[in-house]
Length: 285
Image 1 (cartoon, helix red, strand yellow):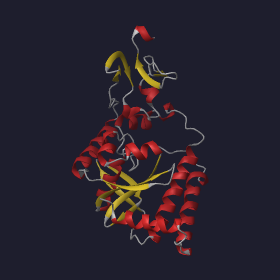
Image 2 (tube, rainbow, N blue to C red):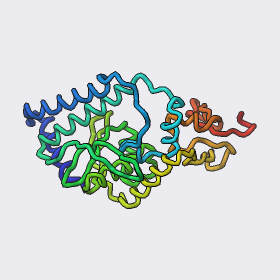
Image 3 (tube, rainbow, N blue to C red):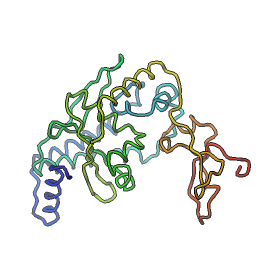
């Protein structure tokens, strides 16, 4: 079932396509101000990243990744030159999306700062919006992520390497509101949808956040995921590959010194896909 706000926004956009929608000067200024704030944040500070702290944006991430971020940040893979532009695209999408919400008649509370006190940590962050007394996040996504990762709450929970569920749970707990879900915009074509956090267990997520805070405090490195056995046509090759939860981790090479990204060694494709191998049998070395 679609969120009522989602239906209102689709109607507003349908009218826009037909040339029947307008946008008030006040809303245009709101969007412009939000984009200006994003530009200052992404380009205007002139400050390098500060010391490690637990934040709402990282508290849901794997603790092995947080250990590297805290202790060996220099081991991270270098960010591409497109990184800041990609962040800006997300900020612009969020700003415009809020403007569309407002013009479509959707009532919402705008972003606000919150603090969650857990295990001696003050975990700070700013949620995106509150609709119907529920905290929602706005996410811009690639076409693949939009179709597969954000297909449903269950598909997101299955491979939540970026910690989106823990982040939303933290915002809800800190603000004293319900956990709503995610407004997701496809950056490739402008599609958008609402993914409700129907399976989110706040108590379970809070226990996970408490466990994360304790492990950060203990500062002992432990891998969260084991290598995955490689198979070809349903049969094991004897090789192991990087766990899917680690694919986008910027510390994957530091965590797995034997990691080697190379074309699939067992493939009949003309151009075999690239595979992150942890170990290879003698046959394939």
